[in-house]
Image: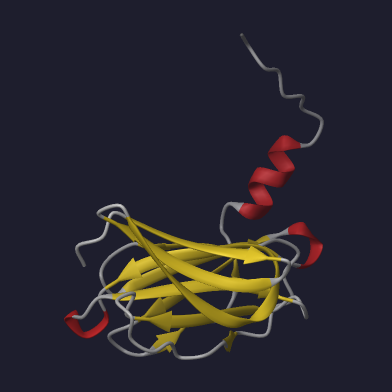
Length: 147
């Protein structure tokens, strides 16, 4: 994909994705509504360029929508797992076919879920290995900012 920037935004709850390239902006109305800020990633399932947008729906669950980012169609919103999130998902393509997402869930634990585009599968939501030790280690500590 010969693009300079991808973005997704929620304007009054309405979802929009876009691509900025060579000074031009292409936007795509994704429909639906969401809470907070969407997360957008570029990846290459099946060797073809794709853009995935992830949001926390109004019911607290994570939803995804995938398009080619070049004017082609979008899949429509699909729920990902059954975890009710307390934060917006943060997602990153760790390779052309793997997407990792994290979000705060029940009991303020950090949860992780992974998409394998080669196998067309999602893992289950799991508590991040760092979630509990990090929370325990931070109890009773103060953060100081240095100038």
